[in-house]
Length: 314
Length: 280
Image (cartoon, rainbow over all chains, first blue to last red; front, top):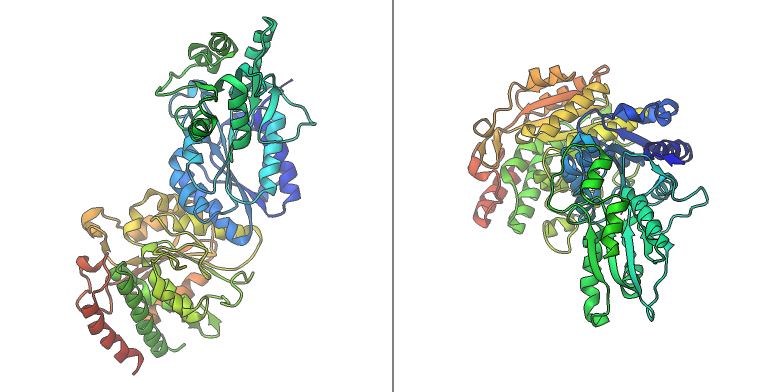
């Protein structure tokens, strides 16, 4: 079944607002596509619209924590992480406040919205701030679990959500973990040829690519990373040792999961004596892309199932 | 406190914060002095039987307290001198202002007892206060939230986003106080970027505007707070005209003293004058 993450947020928030009497939603102005937002209907006295003013929105959410509130800030990824970066750093993360930043429109999922709405720097912007945790769910069920997790967890966190609908990858029995081993076929003594590490919107494209790959009788490891920060360093090193070639696939530029894994690889090279995988990226570096339909952009930039398959074949 | 006692208290606070910044070799003397009387009025003043601000240094998480956000965080030393005097933390800490190992950062952070908001960058405090006031309103509590702003930071667009939101949500539990000392880091505010007319601007955003022609006159400050308390369904802004460096004769109104701490020699001269006031 196809689902979108707006629905995941709505479903999870109804539960969270019920369970946590101190939770509130601070909303930025929002595309109509989100309506009807049930949380706003059922909990209108705890949901506040701040219009188009992201800096004010984030700092105000921080202010509510003085009264023990658990604020969820909802807005566009590029606006929250861009316009309100300083407020997230100085007013939320520096004092380590319990503020949850939830952004929609990650990567190129805002498609025809164009450069202003495309968000390919947000992971870098968020993960570089001390105290901040970064989550990139890949489907409805994972997103729901991420929301439940951050509601119970203390401290600032950022959840990166995409606009488009994707087929479910997980189901209601899914349990959140830092790395989900969707396909595993290498081990340290008998290293696998290739593995893909991915998160968010492009994970379902990776799954398509891997399924095609398997039709040719080939094996490819596939790992999903809902936690970008904190990153499961031990597992990353394990995977780098288990495969000869590792691709990181993400709708993000410099500073995303690929960069985070490169940092671990760079640290690990000395100890592993050059026995770690060759690390490659399939992503969007150094590009402002066109305003066009999401699927057309993915096709053009090799980020759809076919494009990913082409890369891993060679 | 009587007006005379407030004047003495303000002299003592001035001396304490000038001493700590002088020792640290870092401070904004002009700005610390212009806001001193405002902060003293808020923390020590009373309106007949009612205190201006409710707080309990022994219970910094007390549910019934009012909140103060120092948005002009570069004047933190003045706030710290007051919080130490009130017993939020040991006065000994003032000696370690802006130094490794001390709790008193040069700009406010909420790890310091009695401080609620980070004030490390200008223009954020009013938004933070809006959030606190909104949370109180959502819980139907009548606690007050005070936000103390500099005049230079009114150039930040975010202040006006916050002003718009406060008007929109009709936060009559929110009181902004502007320390209009006419000076900012690079000179006169009017030379950098004109901020006037303030009355019209805030009124247009749905605020109740109260002007204080002398922000160093305790009767005027207290009177303005009383008027703000009776505001109906509108946030209030108390626009205080102040003098940068007030209380340091040679620094009053001088741009050159805005962003510096005093030298040892200057300190000796100032300490003498301030002692004369509070030991009177």
